[in-house]
Length: 141
Image: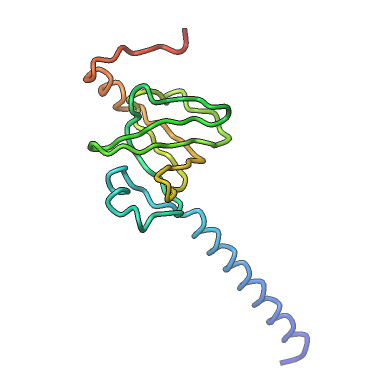
């Protein structure tokens, strides 16, 4: 092989390896384990400080705004977890008591889940409110 061809092959190989490394590291960083509150508590020692997505129903009357943070509790099958949402996105319109919330963040050794992402599912929340005897609020009025 000529010297110019060798430089081209080595340079191309370095670029390909670098791009592959960046793609792999970005993929593993964005990966999150999806759990319910019950599943998280069953294996919580193995999930400390890992990126997680946890699903649960918002416990009524626990939503408290403290500056830019929002604190609330979610529950699943009798297990309750405290969450502090410190994300930059505004809260979803469907986020309220009895809604099913999916929080994205990390579970700390102090037992507090710090969320940087929050989604509220709305398909079944009205059924839960009706079953609990809660009155539905219309925030648009």
